Length: 490
Image 1 (cartoon, rainbow, N blue to C red):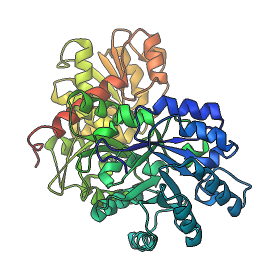
Image 2: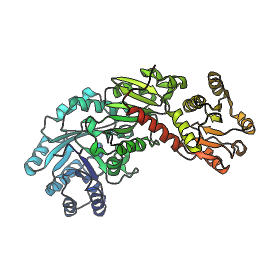
Image 3: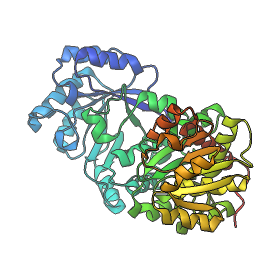
Image 4: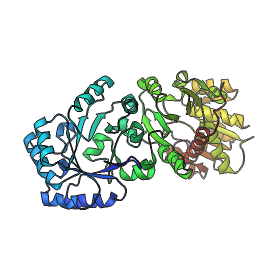
């Protein structure tokens, strides 16, 4: 069997050529616990060529010839031909063979008789959905009617709740002979969290090709990502979980930043990105509270809409009308906001002074703009807030006792002079050159170049990249989660 610590990682070898497969094995053999040869991708190789792969590494070997309906890559073969090729490959004397649980018992009996040193992994793949937990339990019980070393259950996640409830079930089941996989983009976060779900094994590709059939269908990660970024070998069943929730989390670098903090400070923690649909936010939070999550970052579109679903918020977050940080303790969720402090910290570090007395123009009256405006006023800056929809800026201005209006006011504010301009919208707004003052700083809240940063650079502004703000707010989240006390709440 595989070791329980460090957590076993299995490299999936897909070739398709002999040279490709040998190169893939060599690239990862020192960093994984097992090798799986996907015969459905390597089916054009002769037995002698497969034997070269078998002898390339002493690691435990799994042979798999997945059928197309379960995500296999070999089409045009009959079921009899597929099983015949698999039986022939078992002459390699692998440690394990992974085969669908519903093949005939007579075939399984023949395998056990003819290849007694090869252990069985009975698997089930649903490439379309994750059924109800009751159905999963019935399926597992049925699969166990035939003895095997391991039982693999892989389901496609159509949303965050699919993966969350699968993890919850795995933890409640508490078996050491189950391999649990949540496939697809919505379940990808469960790959590095496999030990926390009590899965006996985690699969990875030697080199991730996002355009490959297996990558696109399953959401599988690379060995590099799992070992270097997520440090899966250090993850165990009770490792505290942290993560990002939002409708589109694909472009966030939060997993890189936070897991980097954990590595530097030797924290027993794992940070993952969970895509959540608005319709499943409440149900996702209910499941999250039943799992070892200790903190969450919150992004669009939930910074304001999540407020009724949490137990308490800090006074500053209440004033901002939004949260970007959740701390989970004792089944309760506490909200706070590090967007504003993160932005102002980035500004003050970049300009070498505090913002008290400075004149700031903030473009954007949404959740992020609101948070930055509040924090800037709190630190003594003079602020004007502008928005494409003037009414929204006017409402925020009225609430905070400052000027609020439409973007048409920017030329006037530029003529009057300002010390800094902050672009806090999610849109690629265009700015007339004369509205960007060369003597001012310009902060972009997004972690990528935008028309705003290009224009500000061309005008000679001191440009503060969104990554600087992101690092500052992420550091504040890290300090909050790993402090010895809860945030001050109402």
